Image (cartoon, rainbow, N blue to C red; front, side, top):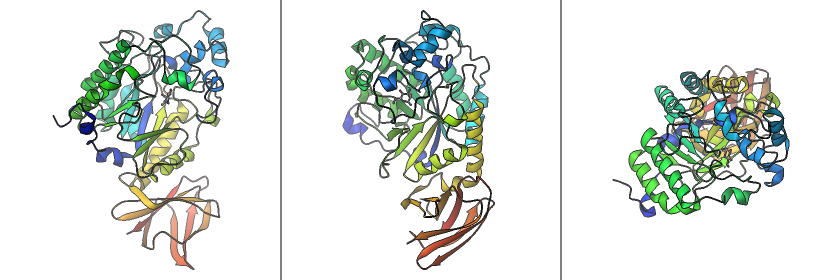
Length: 440
Ligand SMILES: C[C@@H]1N[C@H](CN)[C@@H](O)[C@H](O)[C@@H]1O
């Protein structure tokens, strides 16, 4: 076995090329919380103080159970009015049927979006498992849909040639703890997390590795503090089982292959491989309260991908399916639009590296990004003006030859008075970002 259960050995693992090259993944938050599918769209993570103002007004619909446990606030009031004060969260297993779910349809849509990996929630904070785990009967095979949702999805994703990863909520399990979490401290120090629970989480993670051989282990929030000594054994087993596997950075700083960001992106890492995850709206789980205005626009989604890739990141964009197994039209429409853009412009995305410059904001309002591969430099112009316009880029970062535009628009390129001058021609109204390729 190449990897031994000791951190000196684990630290020899490197990020496999596939993960660096693929750039775009699909996150899926689907679970019991998809039945009520209700949250107060209070604001983006990072814009609201991480105290009661966040936890009792949580825009994350997948936090429904905790929001109700708060005992006050809009979600609690909605629950009492809709289901009654005595309706406990576990009873949603009787209402979750997934009656319209076709995993092949999901996989086809994700493939069309240009995504190359898919990471579903196998168990979110509520503790309900979406695979036929032997460690609890609180799972989708024994209850609710009566199906091994993860096995069906894994097979469908892989049959479309995409990689399958697993999200697991290691630190939180609200089927085990029963108090409302109303502070960041409580989230990272849940009471009642015993050695027994740490063993449960370890055993489930090992079961996920052996059952699915996932390309990504995406643990969330943190790992049970009583189980930190188990992690070298988990990582060694994982890397020996899945040599091209990667793990994220939410394991109590014990180890990571790549760093993660969630919604707020701040300073990017650039030197360190990273991944940004977020919903298309304010929530990961489907929230029936959200309308199109809460969602990033179609072009903003593409810019999000560009702004991530230009800085050495991957974008893990989330899909929140409805309880019946259908994907909300607003989300499907954005994935198809992204996929159409990728059909033409993916050479500037897949298998690229950051350039010496990543982003420039021009005086005329356009924002220009750069990526590169071994033979080309790509210049990606977000929010280009409709019709014909001229971009002036002072002190250009390169003087190589303009090769072509990617897409149905024209461009004339010249160096003038030390500026790279680009005439963009025939840009449609409300255009998606446009890309020009230069030869090194
Ligand atoms: C991807 C997101 N991670 C946060 C924890 N930072 C979760 O609390 C949230 O529900 C979602 O799963």
